[in-house]
Image (tube, rainbow, N blue to C red; front, side, top):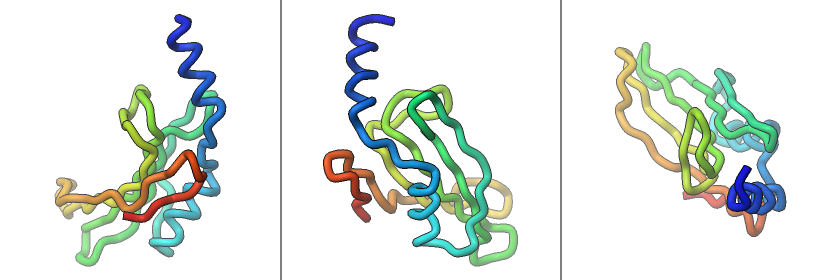
Length: 112
């Protein structure tokens, strides 16, 4: 591991990384029907989590996607964020939006 990587890991270690319960709590504030699908984690905690709920029309769905700031095998993001993605019946993405960003300085979620 290079000094740069060690320094970045030390900085990340000082940051609060939302727990699974915190992430699911944020999703639960926005959806009572979302069901957990999958998550990826590393030694620091969860870096990607996905939950789904039925959409307005039959076959459509809404994904809630948590992505932790950083570069991981399954994601890349400058910020820790919670997104809402609309999926059509055929599986195509119909759009989406960031619904909250995590402010590491305050430890609070900032709604968009």
